[in-house]
Image (cartoon, rainbow, N blue to C red; front, side, top):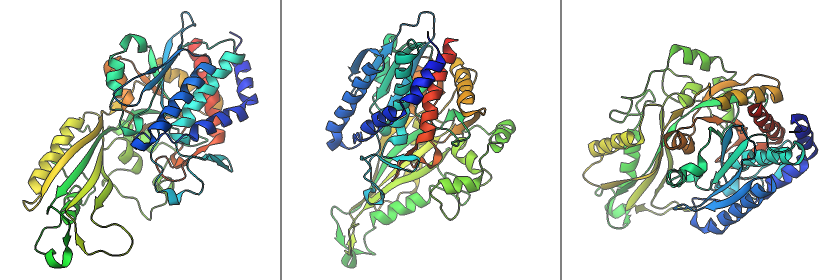
Length: 458
């Protein structure tokens, strides 16, 4: 093995190529939730297959699932070294509202230090960074110093509904010492961090039905119960005045936050005002009484409406009493909570509060269990040293409010720990318009991945 310095020198000499490769990937509108983007999903698969082979992975193959496939590659030539399963995803969120983008979402655009494109931060920038580090080791470092298995899926943004079955069918192929998950971020560009806890997810579609068709609101308004009004009443009752979720038994299994953990979270270089600014600058923050913002998004559960549809929503006016109304609702869960249990809580709430004047139905769309990872895992220790080497400051540990289904799946199916090692920033605007990737942080991320592999080998 030639060494880490030659690998780092290669990375720095090939920054422009790394950026161009990332821009190629970001130009593919691989939106998994919209069926008319299937050809784009196939293009993303082809790109990942080609890139895996180019950076030194062997046995590259496309693993079919019940939906979009997983792309797999490996390099198992490091005798006596650990085997790392690297995870990422090639699918992205939809680009709406398109009118709020300052540049086309699938025409990657550099403005200042940032690259703007849908998927730039979540998760294409992270997997492109891993590819750049692997290429550097292959081309200049004397070969990848540890054993690598890599799987890049195409359904993370829709809840990874087929990933568990794909992994269960290939336990021997994917068996590893631990996983490195690139779908993560750090606290600030000058303060690296490692996420050790993820909230779970329970996602629903709630429909309220009234008359068989839309009615004239003047002829029938006040005599026929409006499904949109009912839906709004139901949603309004899902929280109490203190910001707590108002569903039966919702908090029964939620563990209290220990004094030690609250103290650790309070010591993060992170306050409510900086959080408010990073959250697109709302006038005031909101949340469960008695908890800070970092606690609300990390160690407490939440319930949010992700979208509402009913009746006439076009330009101008139309006096209609809608026949139906729909809301998409997501809950973020903390350890001990179970997606099936909270589904029962929501169902019980609806049975107790929906009036007989309408009919309702609840559809379950996606779920994932919450997880807290082992901070003493060898991967976490190697990542800690790599981050400090590159950023010049030790990382802090924090929980993340989002959900990454693969972490709990790998724990349940393969019995392995996961280290979260990604470089998204809170102000990257993931899932929203003008998503960006901070390029200086991207380049530091590439060097961190290279050092991470070196630490594992030594």
